[in-house]
Length: 446
Image 1 (cartoon, helix red, strand yellow):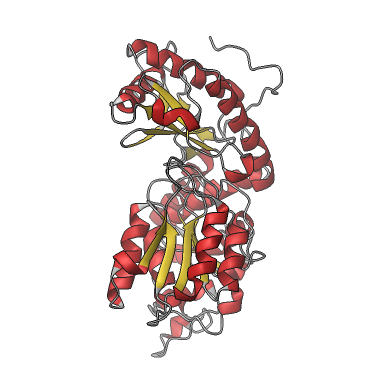
Image 2: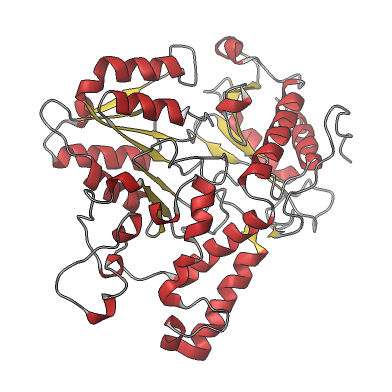
């Protein structure tokens, strides 16, 4: 039985009620859990969100219509969601999540494919201005994309991909260091492209200020929002962001590999037309006339290439509708701040906790939190670094937590990421997670 929630924190139930299907303890192999048929403590939504019941319903609806109507479903749909215009239901919900106009967003492709499309349009290097500025140890897919693009233009990635690393002994980047590099090297930087939230540390970058500084120095400002979309409130249009990309299978809970999102600010509509044109980006009024010359839809939706992946998009729609029914990003953020603060407070009370400044001195098994303490510099994720970082402690702790029914997300060599997502996580889940962390140290004899 979990300890009571501390009195200074209110008891919080999941924001979306019972709108999700959560794995059971028995299904995830939690042999130490006392209630095998109960839902596990699912704190891995930063990697893959669980299934919304509405996503399951939406996919089943389209499967049924596929069987009943086949090709006719493109135009005649019993729920008034014809496949030809299916994403018209998704775009306004995307726009709310990322703070954009509906014409500035599109549901299409995958995260990295969309990143390549945007770099193809916005990375136009010269001999003087050719660098892509990013955080060191960006998500590997981003690193690969950056390197491939600069190579295609004849530049050496070791020079043209300019990475900013934290200061010695620190785990996250300081805002002043990012802005200082842009100020000093901005004349050589073509594109500033950071993660909205850094996948490993959970740091929420000051997107508006970085974007403004990039523009001040004549740079393009793009963002990878894989860990930010559906996690923190965003205002891409008002912040004057040039472009952004995101996936939908983390905080938007749309299922593994689901259709991604893309944003392009409307200020670029006249000058940034698709270089990789496809049929579905053609003007809708003449698309089925099959004209020989490409006439793109104005804005982000002109980047569409192939027709809509309906089954995947149905899961996206269900996830977005679930978020909307729970109140959207405002209530989500307020609840996330409370749950994350509670988790942090309970973790730092553990006898195994070490302040981050002392982590390098730790010789006995323990952990620290490398996510920023300032709530404005983080989303719902806390990244725990297990110590000593080269002693295999993390791997033992990950399996021990799993045995108690706590499903987090491991990143070698020593980090476990834990995310109390307010849509389906409660304050009781947070309290039990902290208890089981201490228990995991004990059962592993650490």
